[in-house]
Image 1 (cartoon, helix red, strand yellow):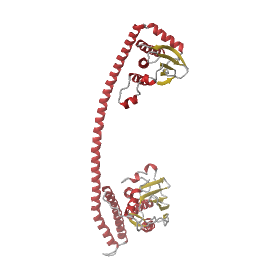
Image 2 (cartoon, rainbow, N blue to C red; image 1 turned 90 degrees about the vertical axis):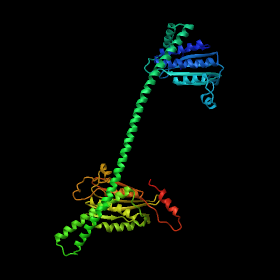
Image 3 (cartoon, helix red, strand yellow; image 1 turned 120 degrees about the vertical axis):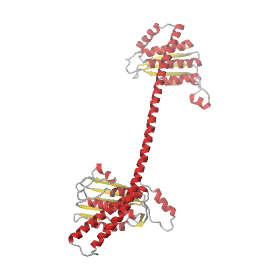
Image 4 (tube, helix red, strand yellow; image 1 turned 90 degrees about the horizontal axis):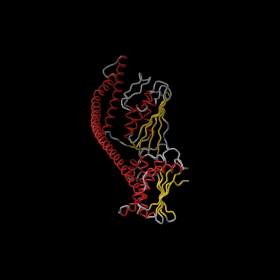
Length: 473
């Protein structure tokens, strides 16, 4: 429910100026800020001018909405026997679509819409009605229609009337424009300052990016140099290692005569150390080849059951004297697949040997699962060993990283096995995974993308599509 504070006709330019003055006085009475008073007065002036352009019989009503929270100052303009199109002119969007300029009435109403909180346009019984609303500031005291009208009346009595009053209001408006221009100038200077700061910042960012690019280039060169070094040194190490192994075998075969028990023991130590170093060199060479993109895949058809059988015989000598069982779950339901069996075997050998090193009691179990829909073959190696803490699980797949544990004094390693597994699995189109709980064991998984053997009559393209369109989820 809104109470009428003041009503006046809009029938001349004097009335338009008077409407502006009345809006400003009511805004001051309701404790609006100086900026809001200017917005209210300017909105009233623009809409009053649009009403006067449409008809000489318009009127303005100033109302106070006492019920709403916050309270609101309403300014209602009525243009009798006038349509909204006549009052506001062509609509802004239609005018732009037609390539014509918007009318003064449309621009005035548009300005009021932006300056006030709400602007409602409606046709009421053939009359065009524009209602502007500005919410009273929350810090303002509660106002009634009587107190606001009395305050506005005192302000009107203090001002001159007639032409002199209109002249004073125009002067007031000019002062507001000067103040607004001064504010705009200050804001423009602030924007110029901020623009200069932003330009300086942009130049700093560009310089930083250039430095980062240079450092990235140096890192790439260093990485390439590291790969070349590993590759060259691995090749250089192989020849003397092969000589050491061959000579140790000759001694163990007693080609040049019998050995004492102590001599045979020492030769076995030499041979074991050379074999371990040879494995490290092979891992380094494989990592260097993968990083250089020179490793080749040799996909061929194989059966997982045969792979498990070969791994069982190959890794049985690594079993501790007692207390740990190496178990392979049946996998007869998995059909023959096409992949690089040598790389798959290398991944599983690293997983299993690593599990055997860190398992003192219990078992190491190897499983395989085939997802025919996505052509994914997943191997898992579960152990009941010492486990890995969550904060260290990512480190085990980084080169030369080893997690400290109580078995390190008895177990030798270089920290290359698991990183190599990760790189090989990625090369095979898959990923590695790890689930572990400290003190209870670990489960390492390797999921790879495989093909199925081509059926006679299938086109080569069908096999290619299977390999390229089935990605990991």
